[in-house]
Image 1 (cartoon, one colour):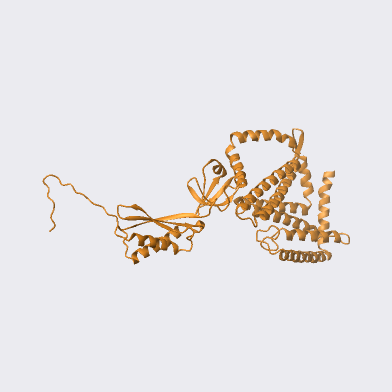
Image 2 (cartoon, one colour):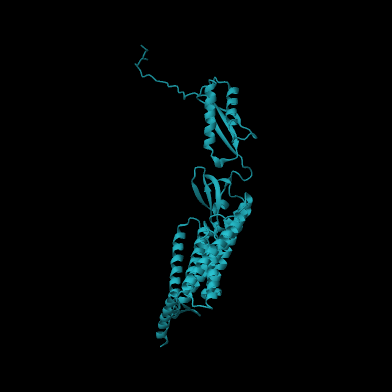
Length: 435
């Protein structure tokens, strides 16, 4: 009998709500709701302006005032306050639907903004955003229609026993929601800590703060997972067996992955390589743009990016071109005719290098006669630079163009390849005489 009266009571409540929605008091509620929207917008605008206009990736404010987390949270708080006050004097209809809508909006904004900040441009983020939106709006519809308690009761009746614990579909759903909320909060806190640590860090401090940021994020995610498992009702003492199994798996199948993670923290702690260093690893030369827990991103001067496992930086020989000194040596080889003025050629080569602002004056460029080639005298011009990230071939090209102009202006010949051909005559053949 009780099961038959529940839907009837829900229908009566729904009819009463629809009747209240047609009363003149609903206009008062609508006016108060619009006032709450305006007040929330003004408060967020004032806080945003007072805080110095944060960047567009801000979780609290977003790109605009209404697409951050603060606006729906403030609006929800104001609307709930009006709902509690109006409920004492009049039947409430508009706020009964406004509160669930604002809760769903706040949940969606929180989930989407945190995922966008933590996982920048990740393809999986779009799928997670849509999943959060659909779940939030579905829960809102069930809440407003009054079907949410009935659905939860039916899900709670579907139970099964796992060891000493009794689980139900409702328990699993609540545990999954708790895990999602805890993970979002953990990622939010880690993103805030990372932003604060890396905001003004440069050089060696950047690598150390990156290590602290990665360690903090890993710790927060681990703690949040433990809290989520406890919320589901799983006994954490059973994880000791799982931990032993994971240890065996790491020792055999996941040793490379574990080595990369450990190597990442060792690299960041020892600062053997840092973000911004120019390195050569596995015949790939470039600049380190990011150091993650498992891999390091190396960007070449040509724009290509290489994903290098951190294990290679510990077990292999790495050439760090800017660990002790940021200067980089470049050279170019020039060949001139044997009858050229050697002193003049060396001076022209040096002047061509000094005409470029990117070439260092201390130590200055130097030209040397390095080889007596088959076609002419070979000179090597050496010069130093400190900004290889701005390009190396372009600087070498400018210097070569300057050398070519100087040599032509002074009448110094750049010889063509010369070869002497000997012809062996067969018996009875004569050398052809020119006519």
